[in-house]
Length: 255
Image (cartoon, rainbow, N blue to C red; front, side, top):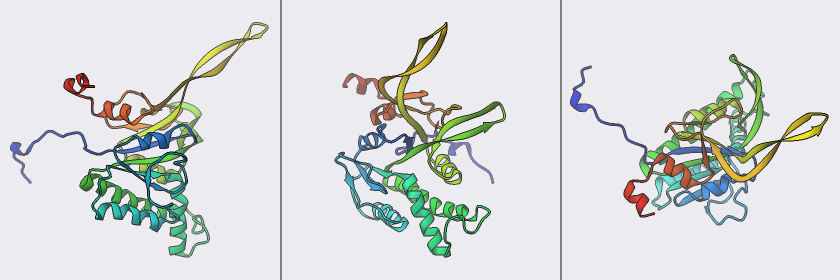
């Protein structure tokens, strides 16, 4: 098949992004999501707390979540961001659906990882709807998750413990692969050496009061971004948005 050089065009930044934000409870993940443009929350847990946000009723099944996303795709509205809070609470709803369809007692009943393979198909259904919302509704997608510490083996370094999304590894890989940014959220700390006597010292972590998100992977945590972002940003939507879409000189001058 032949192509003409006149068909070449420059790629552009996406109008809407898919953003995974994960970390320990209470670090500020939901607060960040609430700062995004006109968000609508799909809650699989009561994570909003005292935040005043627009939200569907609490989702109690996979079918609920799918129906809510489908509604956003089919009906007219002015929401600019869809937030799923959280995807690690969505996962057992997916497992329950898979078990109901296949008449399994648990997701591990079929053995050999077949249950998790079946669950991956439902994850793909959710991701496909989210992709359509981005492409046809220009909606940002924010997926909130908690973190878990797992042993990580790398052939170039010794085994380390690192923060990962609190999902089955197959689901985590799917979500990570299809997202533009995966950010690990944490409290910023500094270390201070203290004398412990007899010439010995120990290091102690001290909170700086800042909350940050890491956008580049390290041996200590999973992260990624497709935009060449700084390795660390303040934990806010404006910090992320301005790093992806830097304001023009005129916009900066006007505040």
